[in-house]
Length: 109
Image 1: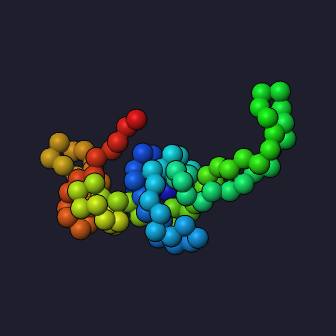
Image 2: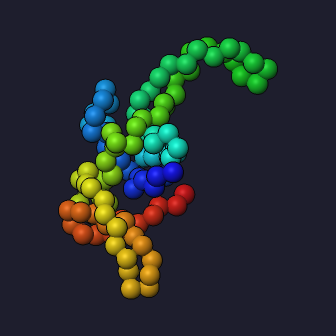
């Protein structure tokens, strides 16, 4: 299984496809499929049957998008950037913006 440089709660920009240029927050990363679900991006219409819990009808929801079509937005320079890694003195590994060299913090919800 591959490790990806995009994580949950990161702000990303879509760089290819029908939603090119849109910015959103990553809801979920699916590493086995190399895909991610991003808020407000790749909206699909799903026809749902009524069940005892909910009313049926046409529901709009976000579908997954391939990770290669996403670029992380650096919190400091506010641009879509490539991501590198750096090992700190204490031995921890952090993601680093390739443009400004600033560490990209892990945002937990």
